[in-house]
Amino acid sequence: MEYISTRGSAPALDFEGVTLAGLANDGGLYLPREWPRFSEGEIAAMAGLPYAELAVRVMQPFVGESLSESELRALCAQAYGRFAHAAVTPLKQLDEQQWLLELFHGPTLAFKDVALQLLGLLFETFLTRSKDHLTIVGATSGDTGSAAIDAVAGRERIDIFMLHPKGRVSDVQRRQMTTVLAPNVHNIAIEGSFDDAQAMVKRIFRDPAMTARFNIGAVNSINWARLMAQVVYYFAAALQLGAPRRPVAFSVPTGNFGDVFAGYVAAQMGLPITQLIVATNINDILHRALSEGDYSAGLVTPTAAPSMDIQVSSNFERLLFDAGGRDGSAMAAQMAGFEATKAMRLTNAQREGAAHLFSSARIDSAEMAEAMLWASTACGEIIDPHTAIGLHAARASGLSKDIPIVTLATAHPAKFRDAVEQATGVCPHLPDRVGDLFAREEAFCELPGDYDAVAAFIAGRAVSNS
Ligand SMILES: *Cc1c(COP(=O)(O)O)cnc(C)c1O
Image (cartoon, rainbow, N blue to C red):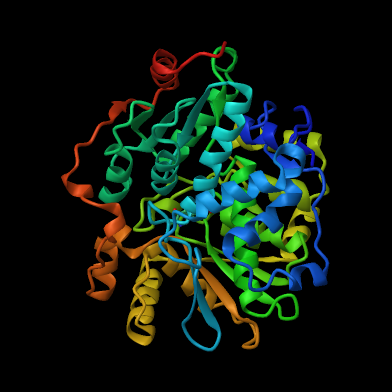
């Protein structure tokens, strides 16, 4: 399988290459040159497979020659063996139409573990082969950071530098990152928003002074391997609900457009998805883009669903490229315009291409609380604020009753217990697997929102390439 950049001028790479590269060197994002497609018979034959085996079937076409099938199988068994539920991503019924897909049974309690546990092992496999060192630089709105740190802590050929917006992640989220004291883990609290931190990370990938000295790698969903791993649970859920015969819809609480883009990929591969509901909080750039064609970044407003407090959704570029006819130079020009003005209009082709599959909704804090309360009182389920945003959008979607709607439950409620307690009166407990989080020592450094300071910090601590 060959991968190309959305901006048309970076070299094509194989799976191993895109996994280690993260962002393409023309600033674009990598995508497969074409979508692999399963027949109805092939999809039907996946029903009932254990999660790790389903993962092998779904991911094999993307991995191509980079791993043998038995290597891939061993990595999947190891990655998904760390989950606290035998089904890995169990599906729960709420009422006749509404379902929850619980993606938070991994070590750090959010869906990011599903992809990052595997990505950590992929890095290790490829780096051991090439005898290289990788310097991971990432930005987190809260959950990517802890999941990535858990996945790579203590690994010999990897250093990780994780930027989080100071004071804008929950205590549980911060402590899950800062109490990991392995010498290869470097936490940085940075002044500003997640978008500021993400922009700095993207700049590092394009800074020749950094890329010449260090092998820079990505754990954000700009890394294709993350999206690939997330495609698997769309298959897992749809198969349980009767795919390929019965169509299914998904509602996805969305920030960086990674998770919901994985659903789009599943649909391109032949999974019968009728609709993908993009649920945003009041930071609603994606809702405005999909409903009005207006992709313009406002200021980020902090909310009780901080992992979605995002105004620049990196993976949206992947959709615009694919739905808009895959024209790399046009995409590069469109994104240059956006980077200069923080605003752009979608083309008609992009709007029509997206409208086949996507709808969108903007959910405010009252609606979010209402969904948490409904789940608690009507169904006996305590859900987190992000999941509540997805569930509210699912219940308001107006989709025909014979189409099941699966809301992706993206985080464990105990990760956001203040907001959950406020809405439901119930204080969710942290599962045993996170241990004595509040008793452990924290280590992180604070830096101003200044590119040179961040680059110098990393350059002073990372291992340069040989
Ligand atoms: C990261 C995250 C999201 C948003 O996912 P994207 O892939 O960025 O759209 C939603 N909910 C939770 C709990 C998250 O951690």
